Length: 277
Ligand code: S0N
Image (cartoon, rainbow, N blue to C red; front, side, top):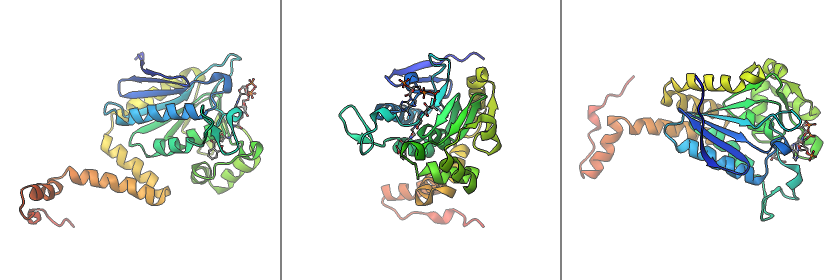
């Protein structure tokens, strides 16, 4: 089926579309290989928040605009080094920021599935962005890697620890210490991504995976995402998982009885509910 993406809102650094339960967010700074500045991240954060709030949306595709004027592609080349100041990336008012960390947490914790569609470079902070997505589908021209120790930065958060959970400690150290670039096929072999498809099939494949997920139970998916996160994210992960348990409890008669009894100024009758084995 032909997709008919509808523009949600016009931004300067990103494109934001929706269609039939899917949202598509595209980093649109081709002159910088889609590197992000603080404004890009604020716009991404706003679009992701909108998709999170929209009850029709279950899956978000995150991608980068391409091809660029020289025919190359990039998912994202990380933080825009031309606005990097002494204490972070400078916004239009000159305030130093590392707001991509807020975006990483939003992508990871939002109870919807985020799929990275990587064509060309996913490098530096751009590599971490695909990493924190639930799934990654790469085009056969995908190139993956970290550059921190080469350009004087590092992401010791999800960029290091979650990477090690995915590819193992030895490989994660290799990726960060040597700053090499890996092909899509190599990334697949190390379990860093989910599949590789021909470049011209990338979006089609993302839409196909998204539609498959949209046919599944939203609550099962949100609880699974929280459970996967809880294993890695300490108390923040437990909070997410427990929040879902509370949501489900609110939806039971038993949970509602407590509230109803309070409002009716009577003792709650929990005796009617079994202590299940
Ligand atoms: C992606 C690369 C390999 C592509 O190479 P290619 O195809 O040869 O293109 P270029 O000619 O190099 O680039 C084309 C134009 O795009 C500009 N450009 C590319 N990347 C960036 C960038 N990151 N920032 C600014 N501009 C960029 C080029 O300058 C060129 O423009 P012109 O022609 O006008 O010069 C190659 O481009 C490359 O290696 N890029 C740099 C990759 C990189 O090192 N990224 C930064 C890594 N660090 C982070 O991302 C930090 C992220 C972060 O926010 C963070 C998060 C958590 C904790 C800490 C941090 C932290 O900042 O420290």
